[in-house]
Image (cartoon, helix red, strand yellow):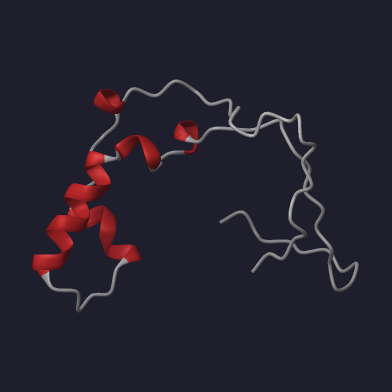
Length: 93
């Protein structure tokens, strides 16, 4: 879990400016029910899964399957305050 202080942007900063790779929704692979399995409850009824899948695919440009589909921002600053200075590491597997 990450904790952070809310970004303090200057009034004249353009919050709406977000740089991203141009990804055409048509070129993105649509989500499938198999893609949803790790993120939904196994007991979820199919009558809920299908509308969810339709919603995700209707707004495919808002969700990323690949890191290459994510955008970036160079605006604003974020300060993260930790409880201690112990480094956090994860093995790359």
